[in-house]
Amino acid sequence: MLDGFRQDLKKPGVQRRALIIAAIVGTLLNCINQGVDVMQGHTLHAGKAVLTYMVPYCVSVYSSIAASRNLK
Image 1: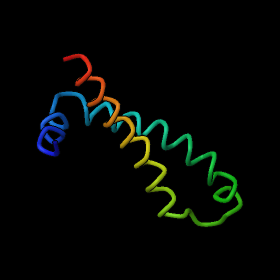
Image 2 (image 1 turned 90 degrees about the vertical axis):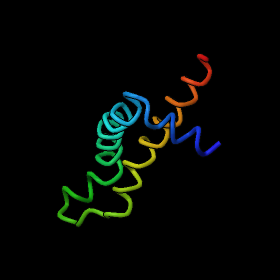
Image 3 (image 1 turned 180 degrees about the vertical axis):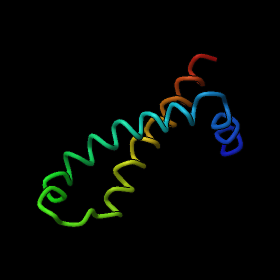
Image 4 (image 1 turned 30 degrees about the vertical axis):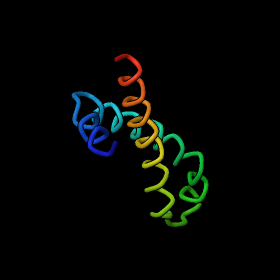
C-alpha cells in the first residue's frame, strides 16, 4: 500500500498542485490565525505556521491520489 502511495505521489502534477494549494490556503489561514498578532508586533509562531501550510498540502495530496485511484 505504501509503495502504491509513493508511486502515485510521483505522478505528474500531484506535488505541484499540492504546493500551490498549500501556498494559497496556508497563507490565507495564517493571516486569519496570526494576522492580528503579527500586526501588533508579536512574533510569528513558527510551529503554527508550519502546520498551517502542511495541512492543506497533505489534504491536497491525499485528495489527488484518491481521485486518481477512483478514476481507474
